[in-house]
Image 1 (cartoon, one colour):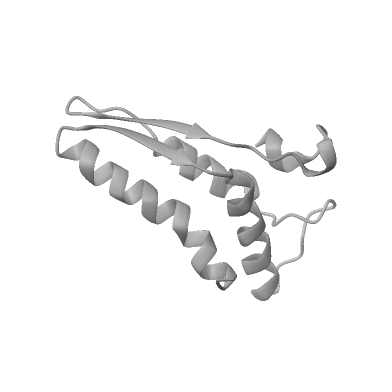
Image 2: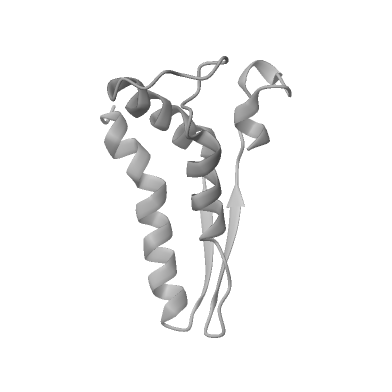
Length: 101
């Protein structure tokens, strides 16, 4: 029951913490309970900012935001981040663009 801005930042905050431990030389396992929640929070924030949604209702920046998050999950010479993520597929619709990103 948190505001969408807070929910959007949870994944990024968790990833920032994982990066800190990785940079200290640790191997990190990052669990993401449901990456779709990140998408929904981004959609709500986008609507609050007055951005026009895409044809299926998601924020126009979905691919960029998801790409930025996923690209930060990486290994370095000192440590690594491995991520296990649950992906919710709305109404089992495999053509929905959210799980595809």
